[in-house]
Image (tube, rainbow, N blue to C red; front, top):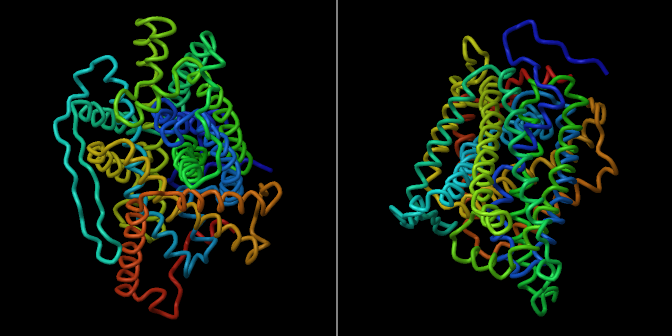
Length: 493
């Protein structure tokens, strides 16, 4: 295999190597998720048996990561799933709809993901400045969706909400520069990320109590409807925490030797982060009783678990120091997410499947500045929602309108186009892809509340209507015998 050279025409530059790509994935995966979701995961199953959700979440991430690895190595372009869905379902026909739906849902799901990191910063800032927890507004809004039922979301504004908004705007300012500089920033940010998680692990293991960590409630493993729904809720949260292993795919056009580095970055980041997560969460359970974590998850307060752990083990000063490290970690995740997702509207617009304005690159630094600004501003608005609502909506929407479609798309691509270039082939195909699909369906099935599923269905329905209206106006497929023009399909051949 040879390295793909820099393009002689203006465009995205391949300046991100394996180390930078893996670092971007790791800071995207770790973020603030494991530091705020452990009380929610424990509450889902009411005991340390919830760690089963972490283990199954890691397995699901590895299975789905192999899907991303094969597709990413085959189509190393900006946009990630946009390109994969288009090619898998037919670049000039049904693939146009599938890729359009992906970009459409991204308008909602990407800011949800980024805003969750911003709110994580605010939650840990409450440990240092408790007044940030003061509630300014708490109001539930209900919107009728006709046959889909009512969609409810809760506006929850505290003083910390403004910290979250400020974090988003700071990340936007730092990203407003050339990608080669951003690769260096990612490596510096990743040092803080690993430092935070290792500090929590050391604190937990140094004061570890085996009996406290592995004391289960009576009937903890009884196979019942409660166990099934609880495990599904725990896996939903674990899936959120592991997500990010695919971030490098959205930067496919900027990765050096993508046929090698994209699969390696995906698989390395899953193994590294999975090991860190498991050790960290067991070490936390060895210091903080699961009953206390269960109560925190129920009361929607005091999410700064890592700060509490460090305070009880090493003292107040270490609690403060750890808090700032975790805030650094959460900010690094916001930085990485905003970077990766900003490339998707650009790729779709360049392909003629999104608003033309988003196809423009910054005239000096050659990055998609208009999509970056859009994501930043929408994320700022989403910071007014509750953290747990953001996570649930994000996971359900992504599974429904992206991940399941992408797994099935891989099956179609393999069967219809065996000649398609595949520098990396999934191990044990099709078993990992089938297990990934089953895992995602199980998470949806176990949802006790259908509001996120309604939201996802509404997004897909509106997206289909918009696509059909646009295609009718332009006399494109499916309202014309002529397929839509597809400049990208030729580029990957």
